[in-house]
Every structure is written in structure tokens, then in C-alpha cells.
Image (cartoon, rainbow, N blue to C red; front, side, top):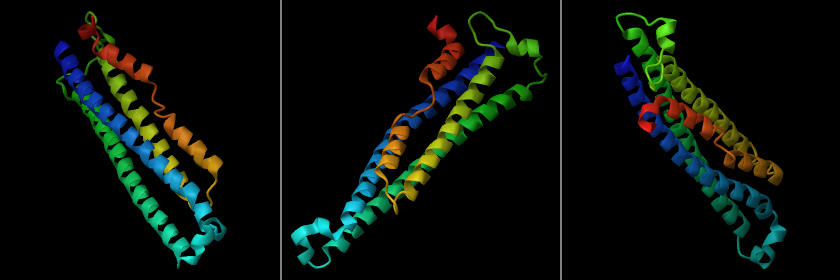
Length: 198
């Protein structure tokens, strides 16, 4: 059993790497979201000719400025889409780590009994702890990814009818992320790596 637990710990190390990648993507998405929100808020002002004053005499200044802002916004939205794809990649890799962990349990010559799954040796985690931890990490990140996708979709709908309150609320919701409680994740890792801590 000790050898199996060590194999699970290797999977948790891979999961921790994925979570570090997730944190970097979160920072990037917040910057992209903030930039796109700023442009969307400016669009209403830029669409009104009165805001250009004497610059209205310079050819198609209003159209040129609006076109440039829309191009910038389009570029940021494409970048956000790529960032979401990278988030999805992390979710898929966590799912694979979890699936491989379940497969490892089934792949042995004999299926462990419920008692064996819950059995602990010293401070080492039980096999059930390992399986549950991998499942929780995957589920947390999966649901978090779905929320982020919804926020980005909602942002896109505000381009035609910008509402600063809605933009602020969406941005705050994203900044308040991750909804993955760090303490809960740390508890999972503390259980799995208990013998290294003690």
C-alpha cells in the first residue's frame, strides 16, 4: 500500500503544477478582462459626436477612433478566448490525473476492499483520501472554469449595450476569484503529504 500511496503523491505533485499554471492564467485573465471593460466603457462616450468638440472638423476622427478601439477590443477578446482554452487544458489534465488515479486502483491484481481503501499506515493518507482529493481538485477547477467562461460570455454581450454597473459587477466577480478555497486545497495537500510535514 505504501508504494501505491507514493504513486498517488506523484499525481498530486503534477496537480500542484497545474494549479500553479491556473494561478498564472487567473492573473492574465483579470488583466485582459480589465482592459476590455475599459474599452467597452469608453465606447459609449466615443460614439457621441459632442464629445469630440473641435476635433469634429478633422475628417472622420470619430469613425477612426471607434474603429481603433473596436480593433483593440477584438484583439483582447481573442486573447481571452485563448486564455480560457488554456484554463480548459488545465481542467482536462486534472481530469486525466484523477482518471489515472482511479484506473490505478482498478488496475491491480485484486480490488482493494472498502476497509483497505480507508486504512492508514501511520501519518500516510488512505487510498480513499488520495482518490477523494484528486476528484475534489478536478471538480473545483472544472466548475471554476465554467464560471469564468460565463463571465467572458457575459462581457461580450455588454459591447452593444454597455452598462457600467454590470461591467463593474462582472469584473469584481472575476477579481474575487478563484472561488476555489485555498484553505480547502491546502488541507487536501496536507493530508496527502502528511509524512513530509511531520
